Image 1 (cartoon, helix red, strand yellow):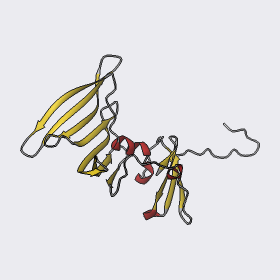
Image 2: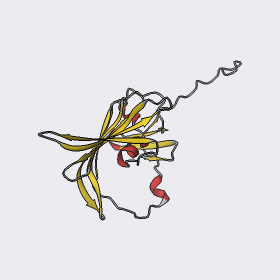
Image 3: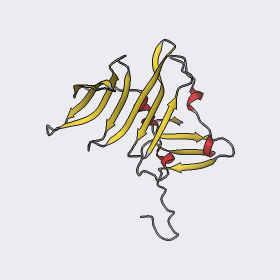
Image 4: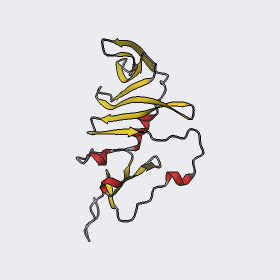
Length: 187
């Protein structure tokens, strides 16, 4: 998958498909594969820092089977109402990130990302196993990191993805207006 910030391209070898579309979803598709978007991966892989207007409530969630610190990140709206924006879970044993839940303004889960099997990649700890669940978009993805190069130069050609020969092109999330008939102006 590659993106220029507005549009994305995705090659799915198992389906012999090449998907192109906008980064934003106007209307979720019944075909779950068509709901994949680059920002869903980015927001799960890169945990963003707190915004200046966000506050944190710390919960110590410990029982017979679990030991987590949970940061409940809240935002106060212009009307003074508190809104839960996300929760960030840390394993109390090693203080590593274990889970992040991102919520919409109504409190519905947008992304539920779980991180495990932390490994050292070029001196940087990173989870080898990442599960990304998108309940609203009705899909889930599991990422297994096989190799990671940290702070190595990346050439521009790494951000280019051409459609492989023989693959089926699918345009996703794009509304294409119907052609106007002759003599009638488009509405």
